[in-house]
Length: 104
Image (cartoon, rainbow, N blue to C red; front, side, top):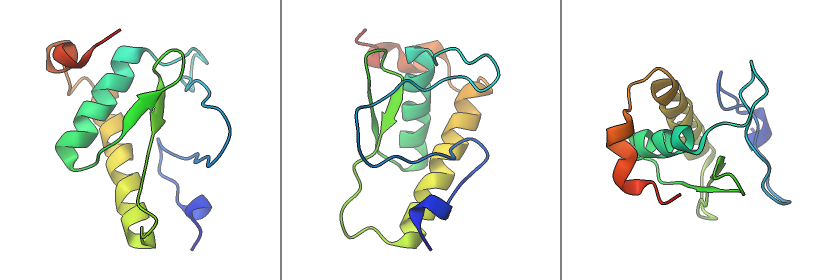
């Protein structure tokens, strides 16, 4: 199975090269707010994943997996990211939860 074949309802695009580009809200086509990105990262950490943000507006998720990553680990990671996005956008992570991490 290819990583390109792994998709979840909210995390369905993986890119391996090139400069980071803004993440956008699928409904409004507006850039995702940096606070939303912070909430996704925070919730992902709570669920067991480690990733960070990049991009001019701090709204692109960046993953740095080891070269020994298995297909099962990719699927598990994608599921965690999907759940983190769902939880953050559903309001399960508050502004207070991420206030100490907001450097922008």
